[in-house]
Image (tube, rainbow, N blue to C red; front, side):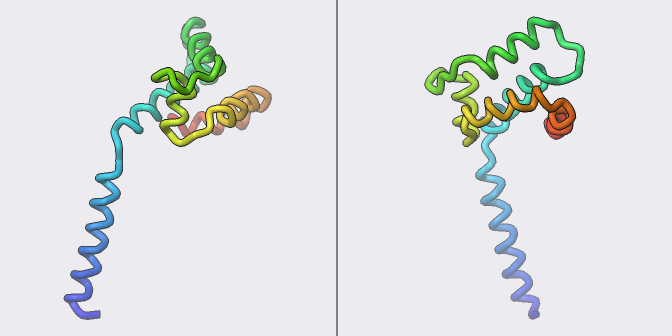
Length: 108
């Protein structure tokens, strides 16, 4: 491969990387962190005040209000997740603590 071909390929890779970096949205990272924190607070083994656990569970399992800013359904929709499916998955994890702890380790 000639040096000019290598340079051209390098530029294409650099261009793709630049596009990927430009598509990262800090707002999405924030919403992801909010959802992760709520899941960890609701199910994590860390010692949390009971009101924190209760509040997190109310937020996760309360009525779905996708039009209310920063509600569970609204956050889920903005992360391209189906709130009904996510809620059902989280409820099912309560029955399987081993799987739950394995999944929670991915959020930390």
